[in-house]
Length: 471
RNA sequence: GCUCCCUUCGUCUAGCGGUUAGGACAUCGCCCUCUCAAGGCGGGAACACGGGUUCGAGUCCCGUAGGGAGCGCCA
Image (spheres, rainbow, N blue to C red):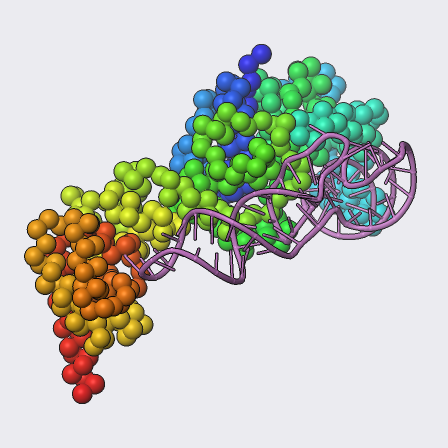
């Protein structure tokens, strides 16, 4: 039997972190088992489902690289099928018409809650509904016995049927409800492993009863623990970004997000860093935790930095171009310096691609003003002589190479009996406008001779003005 | 309220009856250093509580507490 799994989001917003983790585990397990991964859009809630949300989910999945082998299927396109099954259930006596009004149901619920009971349908229409007209269809749940679920994550879990009630499977407007459509879909699509959040664990016995009424094989279940916010409550906007696409926009690498997510509820000994291939090779549902975990943005940031540092410079360079354009900095068609070279110089000092872009702006844009603090500290009278000497020596360097540039800076420092920092830092501020850049020799090499000399000249002029101003 | 699930450093976790309870993020200190980083070394930091079972319990069982989920004509 080959493994078939599905990821079944409902398109009512963005794809959030929790959903992405579920999709990842599902995808990894399927890849490892050589199975088929199905994407299904659960859009039976016509009130809240939107076309835009579907697109956002598709985009997020594509960005993460969690490609589906089948689908996307849309539940709204399968209404005929659900109704067919519901009719079969009615025919077989497993479902019945219910004409209870919402008012009666509300009252019933309130009364039960007030009495400290579990709110549930009282079965009034079980023996035959009164009257015609508006009605729903309810599933006739067995009233005794138990449902035992052998969950791959949680092990055996037992539910008494007496705890369950007759749930609505067809609304009064004729549309099917979730618990019915999932079962029909999972059965029809021959899903062998249902991998989902454990917020569904309580729904599972109802669904198992529907499988039985339909005489269809019950799939294996694996209920993953939830991801919570830092305060232990359900993950939401106030915990920072929860949308997958937001992470992309903020400069995270998909493999970093995935690497972070895979370690939430799963582990392989002490290993923290995983490539996609390693994840596929090592992932197993047997190693999934039962306890919920809290989302930790700092660890994600660390992983992002790590993956940027280890990333291929050609690819990171290309991405750097995208993020520069987002900042309205156009590196041009034939960037000078070349983006991969700049990326290489920044990879170990950027936590996000956005950060890398901000730190690299000066390569592609003139320095119009200096960071105030940096200029005050470094572009002062004492820096004039080193800058002048460096400028002169740099103008004469035969080959514009890192090594030669380094020697120039070194030599000027030695001549003036200054520490390296006293020479390098003024140059850094002069060429980058601020106090931070890659090593000075690399920075200058990338920037090129012309721009370097120009910017040093400008800094010398700036110092002269400053000296003049202070009298 | 009822039912189900969960409980190791602040956080993610290793552990699958005998460990000085390990790693990682974060944090603190030191080293390296032209800035920022990266890197190296080191420190502090956990088995929720109470009963059992056992020669022996973080590991097994039962309670308690705390947290989460479900109890919709949402999914």
